[in-house]
Image 1: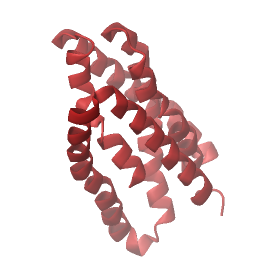
Image 2: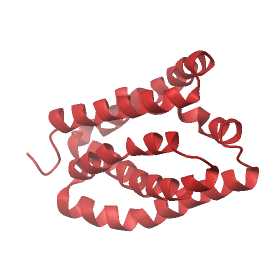
Image 3: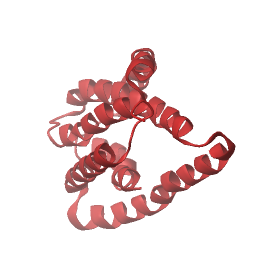
Length: 173
């Protein structure tokens, strides 16, 4: 819940920030999205192997601790071109996180209750998807989008640390 709220408080405003603060063109926005997607696809293979060897919780810990760097790096962007390596990194890290979060859910849920566990997980994901952008829009109007990037970074770090110290992994039983 904390993780997803931290994502969604700023998530809808990355493109706005690109246009308003960095002067991005539609072509640049498309190239950034493509860079993210390509590395997301490529990352699946590596993270899949690491997930099999080290476990989903390990992959989530590694990616969860590195993903907060993404909005932080956005705060230093002087122009949209600076963000190409940032979005390559983001796509790569998110591929591992997404793969591992689903695998961890499957491994920790009792087989007879996987549907219930999945539903609860989806509620935890989508509740912040409603509340986060509303809070973010109020905050963006008051303090601007750039401070929201810092807030998102801090929330992601807090959630990653909470996960790291409270969730036992599938291979740690």
